[in-house]
Amino acid sequence: MATVVWFLHRGSWPSSDVSLLAWHGHEMIFGFAAAAICGFLTTAVPSWTGTTAVSGLPLASLVGLWILGRIGALPFSDSANPLIALLSIAFLPALAAVVGAPLIRERNFRNLPFLVFLAALFIADLMFQAPRFGWIEHAPFDALRLAVNTVLLMVLIVGGRIIPAFTRSGLRTMGRSADIKIRPLIDLSAILSGVAVLLGDLLAEGTALSGALAGLAASLLAIRLSGWSGQRTLEIPLVWVLHLGYCWLIIGLALKAVWLLAGFGWAMNWMHAVTTGAFGTMILGVTTRAALGHTGRALAAPKPIVVSYLLVSLAATLRVWGPWLAPNYYWQALTLAIAAWIGAYLIFLWLFTPILVSPRADGQPG
Image (cartoon, rainbow, N blue to C red; front, side):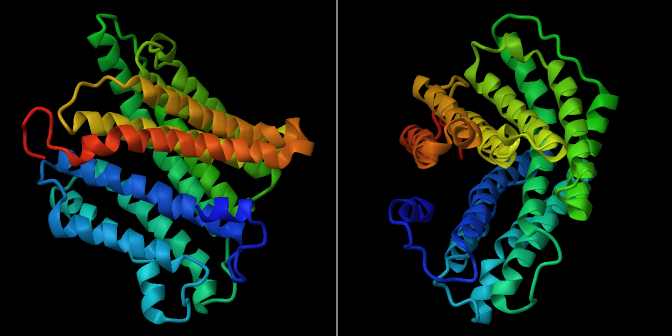
């Protein structure tokens, strides 16, 4: 909301060590995306490990630390206060402790890499905020780029697990054959290419090498996605939205390659294809499905939520290509993108808040 306020009243952003754009990037990852990651892991880890769902004081503590982190990141917070500084970065370590304990106790080695991702996000958050706290003068790398690439890698991996599974179950529910191609070599190559993108940006950000790695990742992800029968899910919104989110990941990486290797202006806003398009779509798609399934409701998307899926893609399209197509109408394109994004998530809140605060529809506990 602070971004919107500044946009409507330019010059209202207070003098701070953190610019509005840097704060916006930080909060979209460590506020918006981190909250979604928390919701995913606190829901998935009990299923993976057969343990009790996270609830009560541990869950309330995570919510409290997330809120304190958002307050601590604001420019008017006293960054010189050690307590505020520590509380500003406490959420991710706390989340790692809550979800890591059952993973380690149950020796769930397959999912231990998620603790590595949380550690990488924590390091990125620490390096972003440490100059504000006076702990270091400058971060040794682009902390926000590390954070974006870490979330990208998580989407790449989680998408590779859930999209084929949900596609298969969705098609079978409709009485259709599910010809899903699982190709282990392609899957492994795609994951390793995501790791390479992350390392390439750490070591050679903005170079042709980084662009080439992005292009390779886009190609491998496209080959991977081509085997998941997405074209057959157009009547199943809860499924096609996940394919759409993965498409945005491929588009973002391809645009990054074009920008860094060829410098075409229409590709320069590739970052928003990854963040607004891929992250925004995948988070909305997974959240709506989980909200329905974990409240005992049928896995059928309400019609208005389909509009919200499309609005996120509209926001991404306007943000990525609007300034290039109509440079004289930059602010108008940005305004429409903001409106589409806010509209998408307002629809979600309108439909799903009553669902999430009500007892389960099937009478089961939870």
